[in-house]
Length: 272
Length: 272
Image (cartoon, rainbow over all chains, first blue to last red; front, top):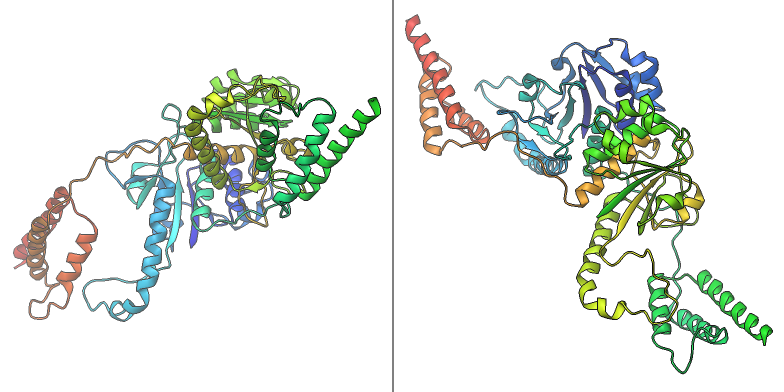
């Protein structure tokens, strides 16, 4: 789904750089700045520094004068707002809203094929056409206000939803870059995410017989060093069995543990 | 659940400030710095500036020399690591891991009451006691390595899980503060979240009769201004009906729309 991040009246160059980086790590690259404090903010040293390797996002970014210019091709506008307003779009948690939005999109896609014929000729009933997004081609724009005051009411009123990141009721002051990171992350996750590559190779687990054999070896070893009294074993071996079950031992670890048992026994024998 | 953020060998003062702020907005306040580059980092100007209002987190924070000192009372250690290692704890997505961890915790809590009697007397089978966390009192520590190189293998090997934030496969370079924000957010959400206060008051929806009355008024108005031809109405009124149904009109909006209709009619009458 087409995704755009729109920063309105941003003051700090560092935040523009942080925004580019936050977007790129989540695979987004469409950044538009509406009337930033510094017109040359995309080329400022601090911006470039904080963007780290996301220079391509800065190069592609546009600076425009009005919110209107920033919203071409976008059909669903999400405000980000912390402060309550007595009027406007519903305040929603990002995750909850993203799920609903994507469900709607799937329904629209499913419905668009059979309905296309009827909808394509809207007669002369006043529909202007032009620029409207076909069903299933939603463009989502996330709007972020300036650091000190957030979004203006006027801008929030244009939006379909006001996203509110659930924060500490006594300290809701999210840094702009951090807020963009959270929204970009949640939106990417909602879109299916990138997944995570498991760094560790698949572990082969030792089977129960190998574990039992190793435990037998240990029982012998613990007896040899005088830790286990065969006449009063209490629950020691079952406890160790439980411990090693939880540990989901590999064959290599069985080998190591048997080595330990062997060394215990040899040491005990040498001392005699 | 007890939660601690542990920053190891952090280089940039700004990131320490950002960490404090990111933690506080998600309701966490236990920050420990292990051998930071600047021993006085908690009092540096840049730290304080980036922490914004989270000065209390900085004041409570500790600087220690070794990771061991940072982990007292913690029972579950989460590394954060981007680069694959051929050995070590499983690499997991934060959300997936947090869900599993909390499920485990709930099971432990449920089981702790009946099992307490048996477990409290571990006989003389070598259990040392001291500092071990009772079931259901997990302390979770999130460990973050230095900006340039991340965590050392040695530190990762101590951990129970290696959290990996799913990022763009071609650009996984998360800023340290941004990573802390994402982890703090996901963990807080997993713990139940803060919820969001809907800023807009509950909307009263107009009933069908009010909508139908308004539509009748509009039909009359659209005819009066020559937009609707009663002899060939096509589907105009049903389309408007559908549009206004989707809009879930309030009584106030019905009032506004009736005002518009009234003005149309008056204008048409004045022109005759």
